[in-house]
Amino acid sequence: MLEEIEAITTAMAEYAWGPWLLVLLLGGGLFFLVRSRFTPFRYLPHAIDLLRGRYDNRDDPGHISHFKALSTALAGTIGMGNIAGVALAITIGGPGAIFWMWMTAVVGMATKFFTCSLAVMYRGKDSNGELQGGPMYMIREGLPPRMHWLAYMFAIVGSIGALPALQSNQLIQIVRDLIAIEHGFLAASADPFNFNLGSGLVLAALTAAVVFGGLARIAKVAAAMVPTMSLLYIGAVAIALLLNLDAVPAAFALILTDAFTGEAVAGGGLLAMILYGVRRGAFSNEAGLGTEAMAHGAARTSEPIREGLVAMMGPVIDTLLVCTATAMMILISGVWQQGDAEGVTLTAQAFSELLGPLGTVVVFTCVVSFAITTIFTGSFYGSQCASFLFGAHRKRAYLMLYVSFILVASVISINAAVSVIDASFAMMAIPTMVSALWLSPKVMAAAQDYWAKLQRPS
Image (cartoon, rainbow, N blue to C red):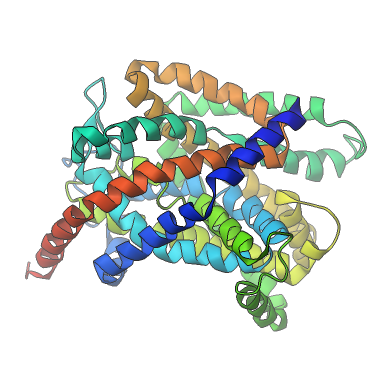
């Protein structure tokens, strides 16, 4: 049964992530870069001021601060996509896939500027009369009625894409491999089904304790955990790279040369490697998929462009910093060419190889924290989609389904877990990118007004 699930989900993901999606995500992102003439990039220092709360006004519409909005969005992106996803990118797509992850981040910055500005610009009210943001509201409020079917398409696939498949699966895998097997609680040859299911029950109970508290509780947890764990992770990698400084240039050279040859790709050639790199990059930073717009759409602000600027920092942190850190550890350690470890276990081996037992502790701590905060944030995304489809009073029913799915994710394979999310993310990109491209002139008009305000003497 589990093998059949894996075969079906893998086939769906492979079909969804065809060359057309490469054109939509990278091509759309390039359009946003050119359309904005790179202007938003000059305002990154202003974005930092926004994060520091310099322009906060508690009377502005919205639910959470700029900092909590970015922390919530990062909680949804800094996680298994940056740790297990990078390991998968290298083992399946080859080192060159990392270059194409970088490309999704560069164009993703521009994409997030547009989508997250629009998420605030076109906020709508749910069935309880509460102000909400996200692609479904952006489409309903900004596009003509004949295009409103896109809003329902996003909400349907978004409620599936938000499910905690990869996060739950890989969190339980690292607990099993690094704790249960390593310390003799579980034999390496034993059937892990019962252990995985029991761990899934514990994780489901922990998740329920947080997610039923709503966005405010999720944002509070994310704001506390994500910055701390990110600094710990990057700090550990920085130490490892300093200790192996002579190997760093060769690792970067391998990424750059393989990006255009695909010599190290497991199968399928150069196009397959590019597509897999873009797929893992999209999973890492979620630019153009629409989930980030739901988090940033909840920000407390009356200036949509402000939230677009804050959102631009997401791909820098989660892909250009965290993903690159993971890739360097795997490539420099050489573990990607040894054995048959995959996903988060491969990353853990790289940390152990370069930093010893301390590295194992660091990666275990960060994986647990990142996975849990991503699971919490995913519940918000999924419940927002369910609320749009069935009414805000149905959120609790969706959250019960969400928590229950953790048990399913705990016992399926990593390939099945990844494929469920990949297929959904591909479908989410269609309504998100179509609506953002359609409404991009509105963003540029608002941006020109905002730039002008900033340059006026106070």
